[in-house]
Each structure stands twice: as structure tokens, then as C-alpha cells.
Image 1 (cartoon, helix red, strand yellow):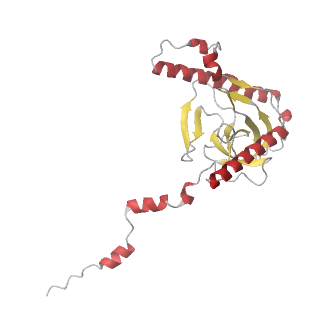
Image 2 (cartoon, rainbow, N blue to C red):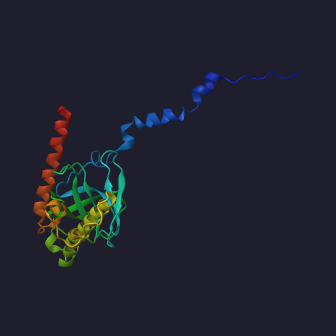
Image 3 (tube, rainbow, N blue to C red):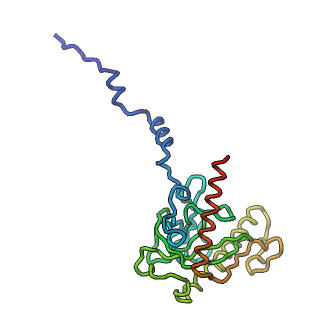
Length: 246
């Protein structure tokens, strides 16, 4: 006699089986903690404006121009530098700060090793590099890694070797400017304006192109950097309050 065939308990199977893939995706998207935004969700740190958290966008020695995608919070590839130079130090931004250009405050962090894009570290401000980029204020905080034994003892820019500051200035004045001019030429070609206006390459810019310049002013001490960080923290707080009121 053939033994009876057991029929599966459907209620038991449905209770223990995994939900469909699309339901799991929607469920994970609904949990805010899975998609933390480095600009808004990472705290600046209790020691700010002197010692603060910094999110690294570009590692020391990189030719890749990474930047924060403000919508998603991911680090995206913006472009590869046109000239044969690399970033002299780790470069990133300070979370929960806001500048007049609607971006977080930029920071250049001096330390021994390159850091992967998207990581964050503790940095100590030692100065400020005032800069104008394409007609807009674009100041950079100069800092050292607070947990690097070779650099953490620095407290002000004047303690650094003069060549280190000259190297930083030269990178932003010459290499970034050349990159902007080559990008402008590329856009000219893509829009059908031939030949490219190579007067941009030798620095002969007219009023139409005067906002494409990069200017670095004299470096300022650590006290000025603290004030700039505090100002950007206050701007960010005002922005958050106004957003809540809406």
C-alpha cells in the first residue's frame, strides 16, 4: 500500500520564507540609518572649531578629482586632473558646516599617509588659505591629522617649512587654474567653437573670462581658521533652523 503523501503546510512556509526581494529593498530604503549622509549625519566633534572631524574626498597623491555628491551623500568621480600633478595632501570637507557657495568648508589635511575617499579622521586647524575660485570665495582650512604622531604637534602655519606652504600655494594657483582652462577649452570644442581660445592658456583673459581665475592670498594664522570654522558652523545651524521652520 502506497504511503500517504504529506501536503506542505502553506501557512508554515509563508511564515518562515524570506519576503520578496523588492520588499526587502523597500524596507532597507525606509530605514534612515542605512544611508547616513557624511555632510549632515557625521558630527563635527566636541573640540570644534580647533579639532574637528574631516571627511576625506581626495587622497594624498591622487590625480582623481573626487567630490561629495550632495544629493546622495556618496563620493563621486568628478574628473581626472588634466595636468601631470597630484594632490599634495589629503583633501576633504568639514561636516555640519556651510559656506557662502552652499558647500561645506574645505580642508587640506597634512599627514604621513594617503587616506581613502569617504573615510573620516580627526583634524586640527593650523591656518587658513584665502582663495578666489572662478570669481567666488573658496577659502581652505589648512590642518594636520590630530592622530598622526609626526604632525599632531603643529599648532600654526608658521611652524611648517616654507617650502611646504609654497607647494600648497603653487598647486592651487597653477595646477588647478590650468585644469580649469583646459576644461573650458574642452567645453569650447564640444560646443563647436573652433579653434579653442588659447589666450586662456597663457593668462590673457578678457572680461568674459575674468571669473575663470584662481587667486591665493597670503596664508592666515590658526586663530583666523578657528573663526572661519565657527562662522561656517553658525551658517549651517541657521540653515537647519530655517529648514525646520519651513
